[in-house]
Image 1 (cartoon, rainbow, N blue to C red):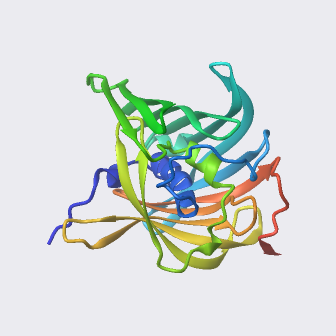
Image 2: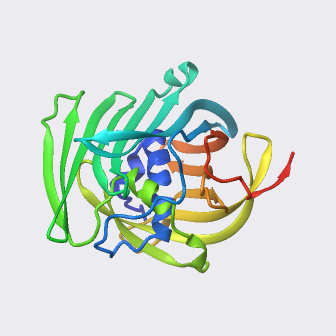
Length: 287
């Protein structure tokens, strides 16, 4: 029987990387909370993380691009806080097969509440811009979202959504949840959570798998927490979308991401970090 997968299965490698970054921290946060602020205990302005992206070409892994994530101090509508930028970029050789340019930007307050989100994605011949504006009133979170198509001559899509729970985007959840401790979870624990994509709010599932030692592209091996981002088909069968590994230390840095795409599989390997707030105590050995 052919299994019917959700829309997210058709996302490109860039979007998969972005969703993995966001999803892994949902294990460590109570999404039912109405409180949308938190104390930043994980990062400092100036943090800069670099990744190498690989794709499987007929059983051979080829480097196809890079990704970077940077955090700096910023103001949004005269409100002090942080700006987070995430960029995925395919190489010129990879562009011959599939062009990939994803740029994400989000602004959060000093208390890490979401303020604004923007994602510009160019994957193949598909070029879109997603935006989300967040506001808060009487204990309720509100988000206005808009998708603009830069290709295919499709009309602009807009929607609004409100919830007594916090509404996060792909990057603001990362900024907040990095300060939480995920070690209280047991292997097999599942978390269901909402995600604002800039076009709609989706419900997703994350599963904690345990601890594993993972080799990165900086010639080091890290002790990592392992998580699975999964979907369910119409028969209720579980399908792995992303497996990811985060450093088991106070930085909670993504070390490796395994992404299962509709046209193959891809991996993102941690390469370097500058400006990290804490020592990388999850390093267990060097090659």
